[in-house]
Image (cartoon, rainbow, N blue to C red; front, top):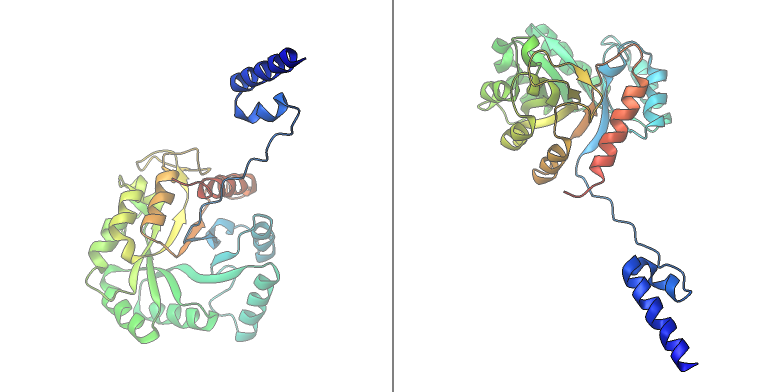
Length: 285
């Protein structure tokens, strides 16, 4: 009996070692231990949505989509909340957003070609109740923008556009034109357009992070003007490196998806992009 029992334990132990420690309990008739789940990474940034993604859809559709994706921040575009909205209409807008668990955190992009348009943009943001404007002012108007951010105590994030538009093609251009202005003037780092202008958005985030107030996240097919929008994770942008950099610089603003592929039928692409970005964001690098 002793020999048989000794043989049993030897055989069981040998088998367990061959099968791995997870099977050790099975060798002796014991249940496998519960494996602890790896903790999710903690990120300083917020995941949001750029309103332009829904240029072909009404606010109700936009908010239903955000709720289904568990996204709680929206950069407000004027086609959802017009510049001429009354205070009552603005109130109703915010109440509707809140009913879906969404907060409008900024307005824009707003193109500004005159001082009057800058005045209207700042007053609009004040009435909407946000303190971040994503804007595109003519270069010669930057001194006036400087004056307005001091007056309103708002942050002003200049949206860059890649090689398609001569004004603000990349992060370096925004930096060079704003570095000597008020520190509340910076950029909305559109990582796709930055890459399409031959730049490295991860390196640019690290270089210019003190002036990055907002981000448009997207993926593109090529690091040239030929690059087109595609679902996040299928293109040329290194998202693990981007998320690692966001943590390193302690970026606390929004990373808002601006999805520009199939804009009249974007919903599957939006869901895939958000799912990929969330999954990558949960990992430690």
